[in-house]
Image 1 (cartoon, rainbow, N blue to C red):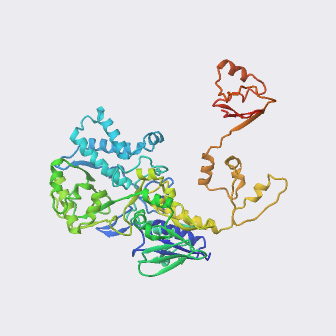
Image 2 (image 1 turned 45 degrees about the vertical axis):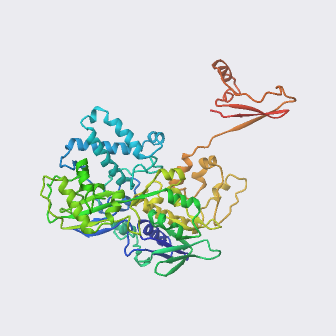
Image 3 (image 1 turned 60 degrees about the vertical axis):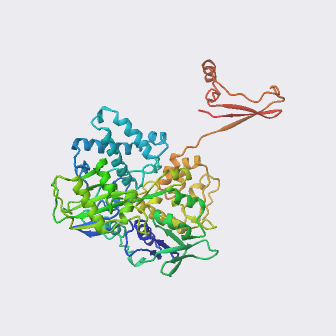
Length: 602
């Protein structure tokens, strides 16, 4: 295939698109990466005794997870132990909440969070997740189960839950986050599969078929030669009459292409879209970018010479009391971010001397502006304040993520907001390509934020890259053979060939014939859409009389059946199966000789 494809970004979606295009015969694929490494928001670095992931860390789920499907038979994933994530809540005065109450509080938090998976809950509450949680939290505190949680502790837990949920959602505030997650799904199975001693960067070897799987191994697709590093794209000039797309980079270099797949983060799109695309993106695309949200979730890794903790200690989650919160806020160096910390946790048995702190939202953004020395000192201060039973030494080394302040990302991962609801913004609209006057995609979009079912996740990013590659593969491959099955229903068995087929037959015909109409069978996603939508029947009956039997001021009537007459109608041997029009039957004058009947049959 001689078409030139430019992919902007060498993250999970960009590499997924490139490998799929190359494996399907596209010979002119180029990736322009603004940074000096592959990976995007997957960033595995050496630290401590092994490696740490500064961004994506766990493979979330098994069923329906394309990352898991690639990895499951290659001995690169390890299952989590539920006890590994069992931590206690500790108050800022050093008081440790009992393990029983800590379990109860954690389970309660997740229970409310997951309750929105219930369709009735999701559709019955139209507002922010913060308001939804506040309502459920207040209801729970009035029950016997939580009688030991006094007003002060309740306030502390509410603040802790706010930060924890924001870290799950990639939100800066749960009062911005919509309760309606739309089509989002969690993949069933182990939600915290870890990458053993290699880190999440392993997924790029999987995408390139670099991890053998015996006799069924696929040819290696080495995408490194396709990547031009340090190519920060400033402008994409598209829709040029009879001309290629032009891509201009910060270093003065330029490229031309027949198609561009843009995989930059939602944060970069938000910051640059008005200057990045020429002409301006259409309003519907701008609204999709403007309405969706990307939050900040950061990590702080601390390495010690040896553990200061016990073997059975997994970490702690932070509860702030007002006295210590006042002291922390008065810190002249770190007082503007320390209270944003969620907690510190052990995370990998291969890192026996390392713990990881999590921080989210605006406080994380302020942390990013501090020096490494100040962040390290601030983290050590928090450990000593909360874990007063131990003599905590200074950390040996520290490393932290800075996703929002990095101009190549401007955030961690995406979520739905109330603003998105108001603007009609969605992942689907983020995913829609910009087409030329002939309907051909010229600028396409991929990345986790464009995945309707798995936004915020790596498997969503990978699927989105494959989706956009498939868009081009389908555009240029020979069309499906639909003629033969269709012609079987006509008197003459004629057939036709075409480069493209536009199928406009009614949904009812698709429901009845699609398994035989298309060869090969349509993909499951298309089958699900056909099968899931409903196609009803609405008929009309026109009656003409020699002259009106009605008066001039009569317009129509609606039918109400009494049981006695309904029983009589049902006994009609010819028309009893349809005469009881249930919902409505409207009779309206169309002329002096005619009236119109409209009904819906149940």
